[in-house]
Length: 478
Ligand code: C2O
Ligand code: CU
Ligand code: CU
Image 1 (cartoon, rainbow, N blue to C red):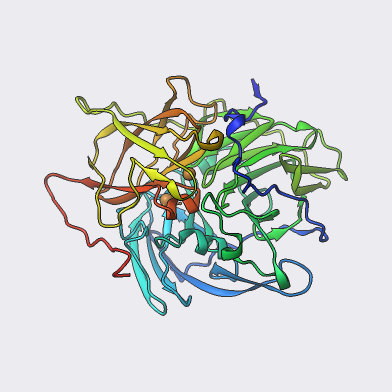
Image 2: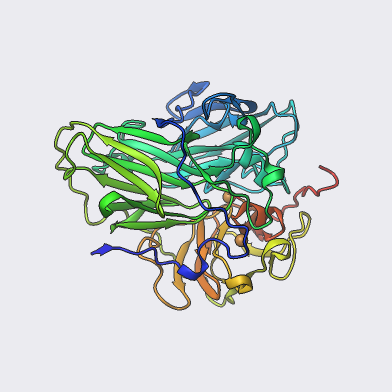
């Protein structure tokens, strides 16, 4: 069956306090969609891959005229894409060539916290390099790397510190999915910015505690992009990389598409849509079939009624591949007996945002869960100020299952592994959560200004046989 709505509460779209910035179609000429290049490993063996990821400042030609001052990983804006093959061990040098401290957070990656995970407790000071090693131990998925220093995550991501990390595995590689990066397997990092004097970005000028927005869609760091389609099927790896914007995606003529993966990897079954809403940090992999489009035509991807990408369809060889009805086996471990249901509450707007009635404390552990235990988390958005807003709830260190929304079934594309879930005002989303590694992990609203504003907490995942202590940073010692 074909799903034709966005599912989320329409009344809670965007914000209603007057601060909302609608998108506007850019007036500058169309240009080819930038494809983030694949990062070349420093060294690679059958079992190990070595990368250097350098956070750097630079300038990027985004509009005609003056270049824009931007930040990026191994490039001037956004980043080069890392590939993590399941089962291999990664060795990564994290180099900070910026004028201020940053951290390198692997959003969605199943690694120990808090240092490898790269949240606030893993600072890399200017001119320094931190080294991490980890074994890739999760199914194929579209993950991402972003800066996460508290409380300037939002500003650093706004300046450009966001890159893709693609986990690959043998199962996914054998499925009849498009696999040629940049040709028929294409990432789309969805962001928005406001251009000021001389084509510059100005985070402070645009600051809004409910999330910074701009009117100009920026797709893979491209203003007003087109993409030349040369295959019948195109796989788009969508990432909501915006600080606060939701994207309500649909194609011209309501061209249907099939979602095959969410945050943590493949969905158990493909799901057909004409419309898809993504909240901040969520990912969706979709397959678009241009089989009924005449070469020479253009298919446009919109958010609401603003064009994001124009797909110029060229001649292609017919592709008769059919997706299997069943894509992957979902883990669904039993809940550990006698565990009370955990309650988490996101509340407030603007400066009043809180998690469980508190602002984030870098040195405060808010919760503990035993490694390997499987627990239910009830995540509530009590927010009814100004009609409320959707808070995207994100957890580090785990890919969870969405059990229910206010006791009802999750949305049709929420049957796979996720690390971020949009919670409507007045809603309780029940999650099934387990951790494979010990450590301290953050959980927070992924509207980045809400996170920096304190709608964040942290959990210690412990092993009773091997108690550990952690050096937790605080704002003063940074
Ligand atoms: Cu995507 Cu705590 O972050
Ligand atoms: Cu994260
Ligand atoms: Cu929020």
